[in-house]
Length: 113
Length: 114
Image 1 (cartoon, rainbow over the protein chains, first blue to last red):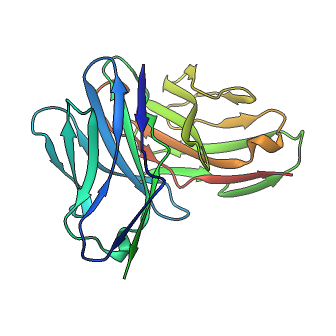
Image 2 (cartoon, rainbow over the protein chains, first blue to last red):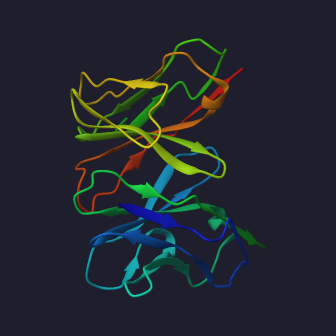
């Protein structure tokens, strides 16, 4: 079985400040973890993924994510937020042997000028 | 254009009518997926397909039918639409199912059932 939790429905941050969007997961086995972003009236766009190895993963648009096995977390981060980062962010997990992704409920990120 | 497309983008239909949502991808990906997105539920998998003529149920398959006669197409049919099926529907594809392979999403179809 595999599940994902995004504990915050919304995250508010001022432009220029660092941002964190939280994700925790529960799997039996080693996980593959993904972050996606959805802009209004658009489909989901892939940001980054964790496979194995380095716990800090770098992705598109300056985003990065930190994998923490002991805390079963995969938080999305960016050192300096932009207003254009405002969007809905989804964390997803797949464990080896499964063909499907399980998504969290999403976190709305609002970056204020 | 390469990528994954969905049609129609917007659809209004009446309760009890049959409606088909189309999905087409140009990458020759083996796997294709249908999700619905609802407030408070995130994305939920309806059906997926590992190859032509191979389909399997996801988390919320009731009331939906899929087929996949060609690799590039994966239509989703609501046989008798209900108001609870009002949602935004996303199609996705990936080269492989298992493993660290991301899915690529279409732009979505917003369906309203009146």
